[in-house]
Length: 169
Image 1 (cartoon, rainbow, N blue to C red):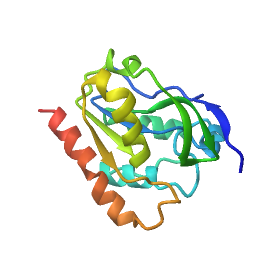
Image 2: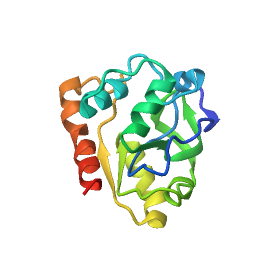
Image 3: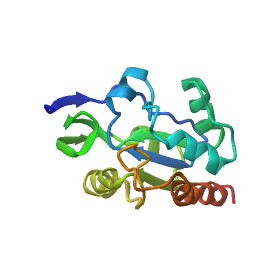
């Protein structure tokens, strides 16, 4: 598979009540086709997050956005553009970070989480120096991360629920 230069086309999801920010690397080809984050049917992000939040599985993009916003979660990606082969984060070259101030200047973000080790490494390199917020790395929910069971992912992502509870205090 050839590398392609990909520019991020999805808007960040957030509102003034967002207190937790979840960042991936770059939307996959399927996510870009579906015009929403974690759009591959085998990606477990929405199953994991809805379980952590104690909600039913959202089926539509509107329901997914509502799930996030109703719980004070902002969602975006670390990168604005990069060279990448398909959805293979390990192939990323020439990364250009998103301007996270678009969210951080409008919300009281108290915790940042990254989905996958590449998102964490890119955030630490490009974003953390400017934000001053240390990210908490979470495992990837990608189908490529098949060694991680759904139960283990839910357990790992439970820290999001804890961060949301702490932001209410």
